[in-house]
Amino acid sequence: MRRSPMQTPQRVARDTTGVAAGIAIFIAALLSGGVTMAAAQVPGLTGTVIVTNKNPSTATLIDLASGATLATLPTGNGPHEIVISRDGRTAVVTDYGTAPAPGSSLTIIDVAALRVIRSLSLGEYRRPHGIVFLPGDSVVAVTVEASRAVLLVNVRSMQVVNAVPTEKVGSHMVGVAADGVRAWTGDIGSHTVTELDLATGRALRSIAVPAQPEALTVTPDGHEVWVGSNATGRVSVVDARTGSVTTAAEGFLWPYRVLFTPDARTVLLPDYRGESLRFIERASRQELGRMEFTAGGPQGITITADGRTALLSLSAKGKIIAIDVARRVVIGELLVGETPDGVVYSPVVVRR
Image (tube, rainbow, N blue to C red):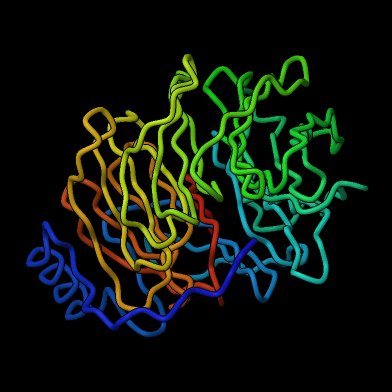
């Protein structure tokens, strides 16, 4: 379901609420050698960033402190999304495939060992994409778009535990409440979001939303489903208790992903075609600020456990940028592979 971004006017990368601070930080890093063409780093942070590179079908692991590439590992064809276990030691990549060749596997990575544990075949199930670890870090819930279902896959025993049908076209992303029981999918072709009971393996209901819902996440309490519409450029909120749908933000060209800060107070929304990252206060739905990029192609986004630093992939530039969430400024960048998409952060520090 990926399409080439439309050409947009060249714009100077800026943070509408902190441009001066951002420039000062970047110049200081440049003069000190913190940002170079060979490698970059994120000052004051440690851990490992793992990012999928769609075109070369790889995953790159990078040390945050030094900016050094630790490893580039093979994945299945056309990797898109990635999820990390709560201890940061296991990453799982969805091998979505390419237009003529649907993928049907997950790539499981041992972060500390810098190796692929296994390419896990999903058999008849095609187009794995959105993925979430359930409590316990043994089972992932993963959409299989072409098969109109969400799979529960045990990545320890390497078995498909269950297939929960959505029966909807283009069930692309999945969000799961903190209890690990209620899940929601964004169904791009059916223009719905579908509620699933993962414990019983049943679809409970589907709710109509603005056309082509792709980006999706769920509040930890399961009360709100935030979903982005590719066709209308609107981000909507579904009240999971009443089923009502209201508008939270508009004017996007492609609201690519939805990410909550760990306290669920702020929503981060990359606009792929609009070349920007918006910050929305969840309760009031007021825009707090916006960062804009020049031909960057913002796509995948993740955040550190303390909520201070977001990591955003710029697909067109082959980079990950680190963002101070409170100040909304770029504090570092990391060079990765071609067409980076999904990205996760692990607190694990890898020593080579």
